[in-house]
Length: 640
Image (cartoon, rainbow, N blue to C red; front, side, top):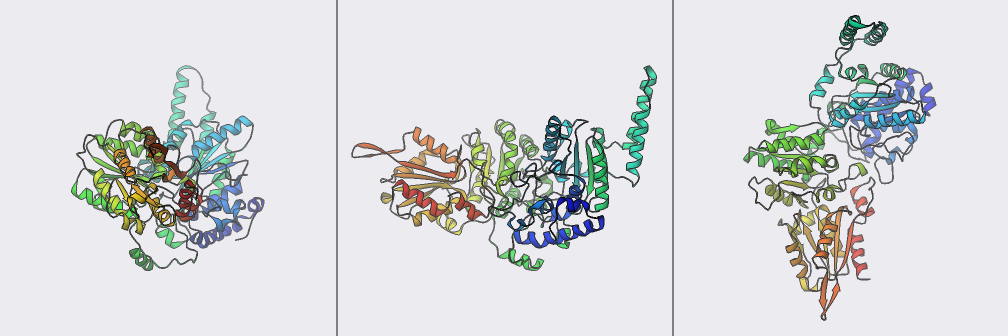
């Protein structure tokens, strides 16, 4: 695949442009397997991305990709081909659109359903500035299940220079659900539809309106004809000119529709059907598995049989363990239901869906609705478990506060991918869930560090008859991947607060307080540190047992320092909360020779920044959360 300027791409004959699409697919298939990333969606959108750059003129025209993971072709053709090998690596190209990366990325995104709102805002800003460009939102049909889309559609004005390109592949990650998915499947048009439609509208609009009864009669006729011609299309009813559906993998057709959309000075929706994974048979046959592929520098993809064999050898992940736990619990309690926001595979609910299809609910990519839906189920007497990624939990904060906690409804929220997630970067790291959840009354928060912890806390959370002192909403956060074997061996019994001390208690000078996956780094720090340290692992973050915690600290008679290690945002996080309470309770000093002296403290956490993409181990080091950095920070408190 040769490097092209946008001018060369625009001037390329159609047959060569079609050939280029094939070359791009080959390039993506060969390279995304190496770098890792979203493959199937980019194979499907190739013609659309090429056509957009041939018809429009960015950066004057704003091309906004919803979610941003479908922008690889756009990146390749806008000057980033030579750095494409750095995709999703530390310091390299983002796996999503990113404003700071290129002038051709006018709006960054990692969460879906935002593009139409952004496009309207940019179109209005351009109008105020006298810029005569178009704002194009490229959005998948899966994202149309998100409520933000409908808020945006409702806000479009008839003079907005906005084009919505609906990339309809009938999928998001899992199969699309809901009435909108069914509606999009029913929309059809003939080859002559656009010419007939345009001429009909021109004829209807040219009919003069006169006064009185005649005006009302003619108006009814016009509306009747318009309804007949437009076939009650939802988008047309909203005042958005509709083009489609058409084959989005046919470059000639795609370009024709985009040219027509560009010609019109009004809001337009171009509906294009594409094949997710097109050009790569394994991805076409199984687009869910190839939605996102792991990096494989040796390009050792292997056969399906080899992959299944490798899968059997892999240790159980927290996601898989959750699926087994909730399915087993549902076998014993018929009130338990499972809710997901278009992420059945991602959150491990496949087994539950197969065994209890009538108790499994996929609400589409609509986390806000999903949380209130969960509250509604709880109000109706069910015991719902809503499983979603930590990063998407942020979108449903108000619903947790207002619809669940405030009403004291019993529900379990399972937050997968908490903590650093790696190559997907700052839009997907689960670093804020603890900080945003701690202030909400009547919420319990658990952070298991091991699989046995996970089993223990779900058993606690799913008890229907709770004690009065217990909270109603239980949030259980756990990381992507598997447990650390050393952590699992050392903390083999699950408790709300556990202690590991390799030395006698009366020799301990420093304590490292931590929770979740990062406990592994605390254990490494203890081994490296020249100061005699112990680890306090917290499983239940809220309500936090301060009495037990103080008892543990008082048990270390020579304690001189407490270090908090947190794989989360520092501001408003667990460590700050506990440290503030301990200070308030006067627990941060010791008496020596009849005189009080302060216990030194240190919080090691994500300090007021967004963490970039990269492999989790290198990000842990980048953030100073690794064992060596923790050890050095602890020693520094002792001026060693």
